[in-house]
Image (cartoon, rainbow, N blue to C red):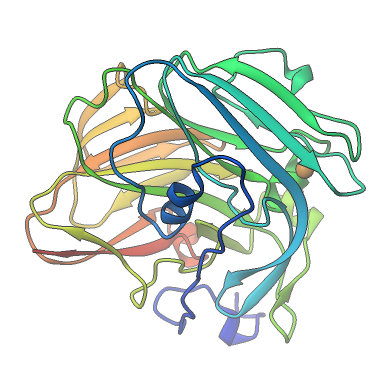
Length: 317
Ligand SMILES: [Cu+2]
């Protein structure tokens, strides 16, 4: 860390943050508004009809120079020009169709961990579209990521996101304030202009320079906190996109009333202060706070939060 220009340090409290604004992606499906809200940190309210539906998502693989916070930029490989890619939200038993439009000169794909089909569907030839369908049988929160070789580089360069499969019967504790958080890693040292060139050797060494929530260092810093209300249940949809490190998710001053492993209501744990989520894995965290104030959330492994994996939830009455 000491070798970086100090202004690009990800260390807690040292950064004056420009607010990150989500640019709505080009989408053909009506989740656009929900995705925009999701990347601002909040999801839309009650979702969809009770019966199974056909849900179709069209994503576009594209290179784009993005902001990764603290004045830094990165030449990302993206879905729809954003990192993470759009949140894809469906209901259990929906028939889901995925179309990936590839406008680059290299191969890309999309593997959604909610899909129980042959992996041969997930990848395409360079410039070719990828199309497949599956039934979303299992509820939960799932990672999706590029399946092109080397997968390591494609994920580390930004091709990942979250699919939520809403349980047919909903969540046991009912409606809640909902957030989406996706943990990711960036590999490379910023130059004096803040440009971070991808570092393949650092990827292989599993030694990221920056660890982020929703695509940027301090996306949710003290100047841009996630706002919640006291006394009301909060539900966090969480994915650790990796590609390498285990996340130990924790919110200071909070014990999670329920943690759903993989976001599956059948796999509930209770009264958990922190919880590990492996790369490519998801979880749902529920909690309530009763006192107004700022609650810091982080990957509580010290080096990980030092490298940027922390943020602020601000509770008010
Ligand atoms: Cu890719």
